[in-house]
Image (cartoon, one colour):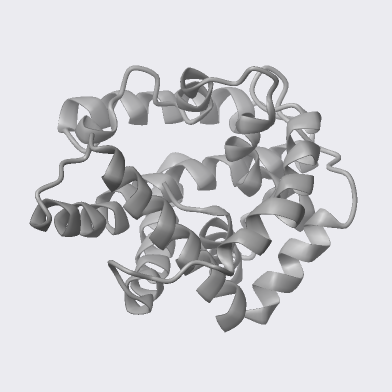
Length: 228
């Protein structure tokens, strides 16, 4: 999965290339952030995160398998039918489109950045289920977020703007406004100070730049099919 700033970078570039995707940019960007704020849910467990990412009973190591990807795609189509095609509130629809883009970005990340990190782990005798591989991912994904903030000041400004006032959108039954607002505090006081201490160890900045370009292209093509 991508980290917070990488999600915003993909979302911003996607909107730049496809400005008719949404009308309410704040709603869209809050939707981009929303799925990962499930961790602010009281007593949240891993199954909660799997559910809001449409990946219940889909293991990380098997997500790219055709049968597992077919299950995920069916869930995406159901999400679109219920929360985008049938949503009459246009601002809420834009939030829900952002939510969808987050899920598609994670899929792109899983097939690119995560695979590069896994290759590095395999070279060290590790497999995807090893705890050390998890720490490798956390380190480099956070370090790459720090790089993106420094490389693209406009993303830093966008994130600051989103955190400047309380969230006015959510997706009942999935992500409550309180989860987003709770995460705003965590991002400001914990995440952003912490990632400044990270150093990229296993992949490089070219990988994240290539990923953003790839993800935007893939998602644009998918949305042409999914939202028609």
